[in-house]
Length: 424
Image (cartoon, rainbow, N blue to C red; front, side):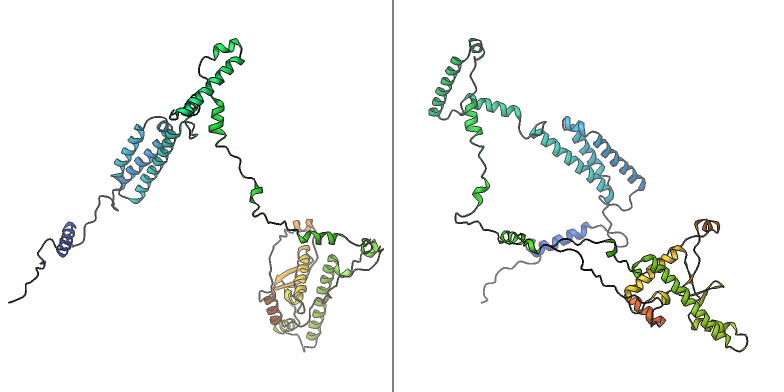
């Protein structure tokens, strides 16, 4: 005898989860349409990348016109009922059915944002009133009058308090009638408003005095600290009168102006050094060429000039390298100063700048020209900026094999002050 078997769901049973899953997959597969090539047909109801351009242009014109009309009718929509706003939203829904591109949908979304903002403003105005103060003034005044007429008890739910308040109001009215003239008595025929009750129960009870900073000191055992810096400051201010000194008075002869510190003198001295160096090198070239047997050829002359550091700007002006002239291998700072002083000479026209056959800058002395002469010869100015840093300075020293500066090295002057004058 076999044991009893437990009934199990079959794959054909429609109530099992597996059957439900298979049914959902079959429904989804059959709902997707296919083309002849087996590719799914895109749903063109909401997005069509190949939408008719003319139809799209007309749609964008309608969307812009709707936005423009809506902005023009903002005041009328705020002042009137919601009919126009509903019409604009219905028109927007009809236009949205023709939207098939994301850019066009952005225009429609912009209109919806503007409509939402205007609806919020209109709702706020309806809730808070025309003045947008947040309080309905008529309702507030009517409730205040009702509150004062009933002596602070609007609902009359407390008979004892109501009777006491009514007695007090009657006494106030009797006292008021006794103190006024006969003419005023004719005007005071109605119930008086209990302003004192309004002030006592509605105003002063809710207007409390804010805490002052004195309550924020902390515990009662707080002891005020004395700043030690105040004592030190007082001690520093107490100086000994005998240690005071009178300021030194300088006379004209006390001011020393060494010749080397004068800019004009330095610039003239540098131009003189350029002239003297070129003259010495030209003499050395002439002396060496004079010992050559016969007439020296051009290549020999160029080799001798290059040996002594002489080149030419044009055909006649002898010159030398700007780097060889201005760089001081002993001081980077004085190298920068020499270039600065040389720029003054170039600006004044006392030194001329050119290029050698290697394209490197060379300089030679020249005579400065006046403004009239520059205008007559149509002389034009050219400006160039040359920057130098410490690594470049070291590379130039190594490239030109510089050992001694052409411009004499200037000794660094230490600032000294002559101790002279009267001291108390």
